Image (tube, rainbow, N blue to C red; front, side):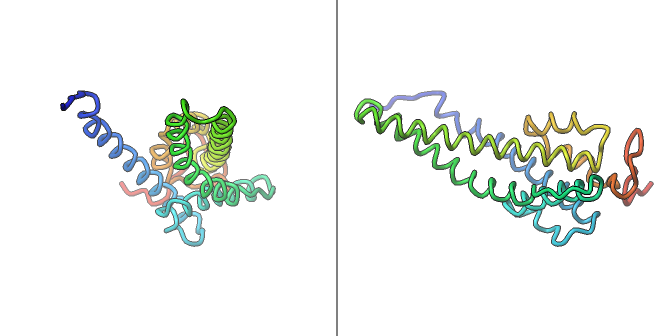
Length: 192
């Protein structure tokens, strides 16, 4: 006997627009990071289009801000790359482990279930650490390109709209080059 569930039959129609929005935000952030890296003369700005290399480039832009203005060496490029490379497969693993926990919940011994739940918490902690490191690096990049709106843009990045913010300030002259200008930073390649 066939049972028709309206929720699951409409799921592809609900997920397709979300996937399109996620792809658009990814392309926007890649374009923004590419333009920022290109304008600052960084090596290989094309890396903004490659998923894990994009984290490296974002970290390098944050490191550039600290090296230029604070004369302080940071390692955002290493942390973001390392956490990004470990976070992605762990996300897939956590989904699989969660599915196994749900399946085995009534059959497995308590110790196995507890071990799987603890592994889910460990994976979640790594993902949280990645998000915190990304937001701190994002804040530093925005401080360099649009310092007057750095907090607003970082809050928007927390809600997943960081790509839009990077697009908005991609052609701004960094603070390390032009100094802090108000109310907005001057722009590269402005044509009337």
